[in-house]
Length: 365
Image 1: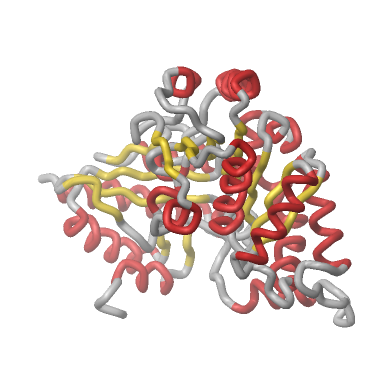
Image 2 (image 1 turned 120 degrees about the horizontal axis):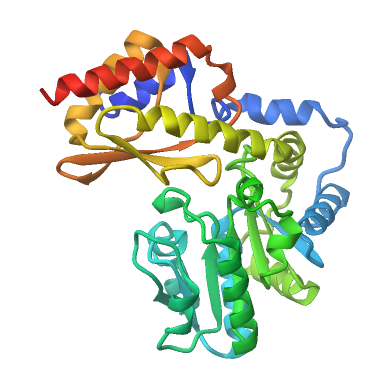
């Protein structure tokens, strides 16, 4: 076992892992490629049947006029915000303080596009209509992430979302959806993707998160918008000679999993309840609104890690491969439910949570 990251190595070596769809290895691509005709022509610089048919399919699913396949969501979203800023000749956008653009992209929006972000809401909660109405600065675009990943996948009420959309349209503010996990929230809202996306001017969705493809994203909106995004994709170096391995895997796993999101959500609710029965454990949200949630444990990271290592060894079940500190006395990890969860025998699942509860209680004596 590696001493650099023992919890990750132990997680990988466990017989069963609770979160996700399974190992991200070459079999993910091979399975998708085996399902297509070996003579299928590749796309060439964004053109060709393989990519164009998929773009049309997802645009229709999202209820948008047009869509473009991108190699990454980071690229797609920066481009979307740049287009809306250029239209208004105002390089200011608003989003949550824990947005991916703010904490995971090395200031790409600022350094590459000169766009200034306006941060809305406290870190621990989602953006509300009140936050938007009370903005002191004029902006070109508001970005909403559904669900808000860094706070456990929290969501605004649907009525709140509609109110924000209505307000933005009245004020001439473009509304962009960071829908990296859009498919995963549809069961909670009891809405179609098209219904949710109708509230937004532009939409980004990912195909490697809940869908489980190897990589890739779609940016959707009006045709004039997506045509301009293609120009920016070329400028960003995103027009690879061919993207078909990404497109084929995205299409294959979209078809396989998009209709399973309700099942994943139900399983996440059951799993969160098991965590919440354990000593000094709470989930955020308390009851998940998608297939993901965060597990907070009131123990220091250096005390929890050996407990989990022992737990994995004893039960053969891995809970997480990553622990993050909240404070000197608390840490947390993220859980997302996919195909792996139902592979775990029920009795062994009960045992791992009984053992976890016991070990946590013993640690506080």
